[in-house]
Length: 553
Image 1: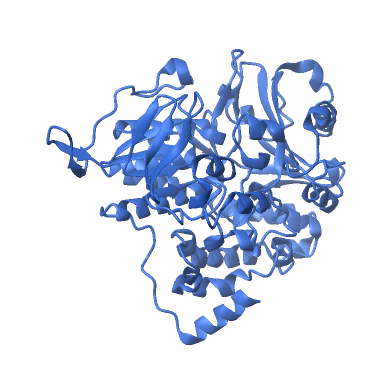
Image 2 (image 1 turned 45 degrees about the vertical axis):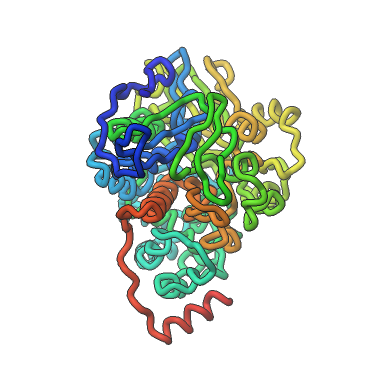
């Protein structure tokens, strides 16, 4: 079944090209029956999984609860012609998705036009009163930008990038495989990587080895918000986030990040995958511990394996019996640590604003207090915010002479006691007032379309557990083997993809997770997998002892 243009607002082929399918027994008439995989959710991880599995000839059925594809990376379109990304607004580290497209006999560049941004974004310190930095991957220019904060810090930029280049290369094998048991934590690649990771340090502490000015450190650490975490708590591994921006670029997909999801769906369909919209899954069907299909309102769908792309904290208690989740029981899910949430305004505005960058980040003057309030479950008294102005690069995102502004404010998840029914109007007014800092004092009179999303909306409308937009927190006790596994432990034939499983949140990491999960699935079905990493090289005794000492620190 194809996806109709009327239902999604996206244009891709209705008639999929059928691929040759591996056999799985015989049907009623004696004909070969293809192996069948049901994918729950058409978000980035679900679509990547559908592509990879369909490319291997499996029968793939994607079931999406909403009327559009993309999950949190979908496009919001209005009758007036405004287009907004719902969640992610830029594309980072395209290598992984390019490799997935190539594996599937397609080309990412043919499906989605990408523009590398320069400057990547504009960072404004001190609530608007501090310095302004136009971040760029041109290192000569970037050194000059940093020198206006601290000349000594500017001299350490290239050393920081070189060290993080080595860190990423050391840790890539770990990010490119699954973790099934505690022994995986002591595998050769992990032991070799640990000395570079300094897991006992925070991102901010690690950055202090290079940059002495707190503002410079924020320039290279605010990216931990992509994980919904504070740089003062986030493990030092994640200095690689800012490194990836400067090393590999920040990209804008023409039409927004939803265009990437549309391209993935096109390829999956051409390979024979079926995508059913408006089809929520009521439960995963088990025979003992083995997943055998799913129940929907329209009936049962049998399968040889199930891939769950739905938000883990929201979906697991609803779809998987508690008795089959010893490691991730209802109790543990309830007590787990979650990322912050976000307060969102999507504003269709009359006028263009040449003074605005494509991406602008305004950091609160009391940034550390701002983060502490969020972690304590309090609505921040002086919020930081992020503003997306895509028409600076892509005029198709709004009607001529108009802008599609996306305003994001980090706020507590629903573990806090904030009443968003009461808070939302005043918080909206405060957020709009902050836009005056960017030279838009009369924004209210220009608004022609508006949509608000609060943490409660993330939970109730978009099925995000606890409204935690970036899923489970990425602290050391919820990473690697301590995160829900790609092959879901305590069950058989059930696999997870998405930000709530290993390796974690963020589009490139979710795509990598889809490769890990589909590789495990294929191998479990007795089919050739798709290795994404080099074989382990044995470590010496000295390396093992040094790594174990680092892990125990």
